[in-house]
Structure formats: structure tokens, C-alpha cells
Image (cartoon, rainbow, N blue to C red; front, side):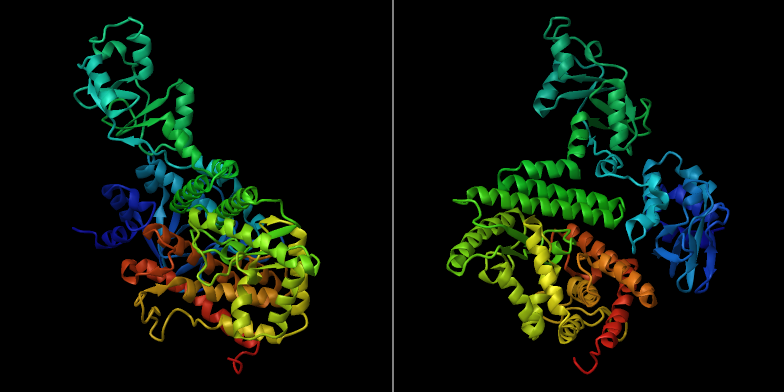
Length: 639
């Protein structure tokens, strides 16, 4: 008799990691043992301090909020898990009492996964364990407030970029070149030469690896006359081979090679010499993987003398970004790493350009990235937004000084364009005289925008509130920031204009909860995740943080986190906005990597139902924060 409930559970679990990487029979065994829990809004599944039980959990419908109670006995949201998300894995990983509280955010259905059954069918599956460790660590880090409040499970999180690389599954060579154990060395060498490879695996009739021959073996055993060229491969090969399974990590592979003083690992079906060969991991493969990590990429960027080298290094960062997203590394860490790489690319482009200039800079200056790079949210290749501020000079030297920096900016923006960052269509770049000015001119410009606001001023100025100093004289940038906030203190009208601009994009869902898509043009029927979902949150965070006179926080999620600290009555809203922004940015980035574009426009028909539901969940705070802006800045009669 069929177990229809187990089949429904199975059909759902197979859509989500780590269950989607299990064998069908193993997954069905788990599905038969799953308990189904129904929760009303506000129901608590477990509390901090409760003894661990024999299950971990996955959300079927609804949402579960995980809280951490801090030293002041106040609750802080750690994560909001929705459909397909796992939580409560501490009993599976650490066998310790719960350190979080799990409460239903709305009416929810939760699957309780029996730990004993799960462990039995996954005991030899390192990919599953890797995913669970990452999920465990991710939920430990607070996605809303300062990083230090989330170090509950710090021992389980890779604590450096190198650790993250070591945590990756090794990328081995599949379908390796082999020869039969009855072959001669000459036959094996001809194969190696024709395929331009440095080793060949000797296999038996059952395709099991019995030995390996490398260039070194040929040099030491044939070229020296120890054996003739027609000797059987069994006389020359190194045997037995060292084997491992398909899902070994980079760190495991490297350790095995060091331990056995070898340069190649044979990858077999079950990880032993008694099963079929499926691949080879070489020392070169390990080095290539290790080379694709932030530390190595940053070194390549700093050593680069030409734009071509910078482009190659930045393209590596996209591969790194994709790998981190696939492993569910916390987005906060990914953003910091990619932002550091983007800034390093800009710095190197400036340094290369300075060497091409006929003379050193006449006065001190600062290069200001704007927009997404200024907010440290730039994940993919996007268009450029930048500016230059330089030290004041006598009036009769101004034009000559500005000309120097305009020429420098042309070289830098040209390099950035070759690297992959498109020119700004509106020419909001440092090569434009409007965006290359002395400190006094910039002060006057911002004062004009702020004290005499209009729609054009808001359009031009809003992007410039997200600047930071990536190269040059930080004191010039600090001086400009102080001047900007001094001007803001003299008016409230400017905030109304900013508020009006922040409301220009309504919440992304229509009256019948349908996605609002583009109505005409090349993007007709596509969903613009940037303008309809991300920009409303970016604009709201900027306006609110400026109104609080807070300097030095440009990142959107960090702005909302700061606002949650400043306004206790709106804490839950701002935390939700921070979470939604990061989830939307992650979604946009994944779409961009998938389609090799900016990820800005999305074909809704390509999304699964679950992806659409997750997107819609992220839209909820947009309407609420826009309503807050209307009330806070009295915009109902101003729009």
C-alpha cells in the first residue's frame, strides 16, 4: 500500500538542499519518518535553553523566526526561515541545548526530520554535512545587527577567506585518460603524448585503478635504462594508488597529497581502490582552486601592471562569488569580500593611470566611488558612478588643475570599462567636469542641492550621498561629509523631496498580489528587481539615516540595522527591511550569474513557485517602510 503522506513529503524535500543531493531511496526512507507540525502565529517550537530533541526542522509553509536572547534579556532576530529553509540543527551538529528560540511568524507547517534516520542514510555523504555546517553557521550570524552579536556558533564558521576555499568540494578531472594493465610503457607514453598529459592511470578489467605512471616515472625508470621502452606498465607504475571519494574537500585532498608525498589522487566511485575510477585530482587542480580565493585574487590585483591583468583577476572574483553563493556562505561576508576586491581593482586602475600621466598630481585629491560601489553593495559588473574631489587652489590655477584630474579620470574610467564596468549612460563619472571639482566647489554644489531642492537636484544628489573614499586624501572626504550634514541641518524641505523620490516606485505587487512588470519597451513583461524592489529600500534607508544625522554608514542593510538600534518602536520593521534587502540582492546576483548579465530584469516564468513566494515575502517590508516615510516626513499632501 502506498504511503501518500510520505510521497508528498518526498516530493517537497527533493526540491531543497541538502535533500536534493540524496539518493531517491534514501530520501524516501527519511520521508516516511518525518513528522508534520502545524503552528499558529506566535506558537513556539523550542526555546533557548530547552534540551535538544531527536529532530531538526524544515519549513513547509509559512515562516519561522529564530530569536537570540542577549545579555540584556532582549530578543534579537537571528533569521527568518521560510519554505525550504532548515533550522534547529544544533542537536544534529553539536548535541547541545538550544541557544535560540523558534517561533511561528505566521500560520506555518514544519517538517520534523528524525536525526537518527537522517544520519544513517547520510553518514558517508560529505556534501550533506558541509551544507548543514554552513546552514548552522549562517543562522548563527545575525543578519540584522552588528556582527559581534552573532558569534554564538563562531567555531563552526570558516573564519577566513582561505578557510572558505578549503571548505569547497575539490574540482577534479573527470573521465581521466587510462591504459590497460596489460599495455606496454610505449603504448602508455604515446597516449600521454597525444593527450598532452603528465600522468596516466593504469586500470584492470573492472576499471579499477591499480597504478599510476607519471612523467617522473618515465624519466627515472626508462630514460635511465632501468627498463626498456616496451616493458609492461606494471613494471613502471607506482602502486598501489591513493584513492578518495568524489565529494572530498580541497583541504582533504591537499592533506592526502602531503601525507603520502604524491601529486595525484584517484577518485573512485566509493572512495576505495576496490571500485571504478571516476576521476583524478592533481596537485595542479588544488593550486588552481586555492588560487581562486580572495587573498590570491587581491595579490594578483596589487601586482597587476596592465588593465588586462586586472580584468582577469576581477573575472576570477565572479567565479568565487558563484561558489560562495552555492555554498550558502552568509551574504554579509560575501559582500565584504567582493567589495574589497572591487575597491582594490579601482585602486590599481588609478595607480596604473597615474604612471601614465606626464606629472604627479598638482594637489591632493580623493577618488569617490558612488552608487552601489559607494554603498559597498556592488556584486556584479555594473555601470560606473564616480567622482573626484581635489584640494582648493588659487582661482588662476583652477582650470589647469581640474584639467589634470579630468585627464586622469579618463584613463581610470577607460581602464574600468575594459575590466568590465560599463560607462555610466548619464556620464556621472569623474571624467565629466560636473563630477570633478575642488572641495569648495563640491561644498557649494551640495549646499545648492540641499537648500534649493528640485526634482533634478534630487536625481543628481541622491547617488552622491553614498560616496566613500577608495583612494587619496581621506580628510577631503571627511570635510565634504561634515559640510553636507551642516547643510542638512538647515532645512527640512530637502527631506520631503528625498521622500517623494523614495516613493516613486510603489511596492512590487499589484492589487491582486501579482508582480508589477515592465509594460513596454525591450523589457516588456519582465520584472525589474532593481527599480521595483531594491531601490525603494535603498532610498528609504538613505533618507532615514540622513534624517538621524548618522555619518559613515553607507551600506543599505547596515543603515537599517543602525535604524533598528535608534528607533526601538520600529525595530522589527527595520530588521525586516535589512533581511529583505540582503535576500533580494542575493537573488539578483544569482540571476545575474545565471544569465551573465546584471540580474536586473527577470523572466518570471523561469522562476519556480517557491522562488516567487520567497520574493513576495521580501516585498512585505517595502510597503510598510514607505508608509513610515509618508507619515515621518508628512508626504501625503506633498506627492
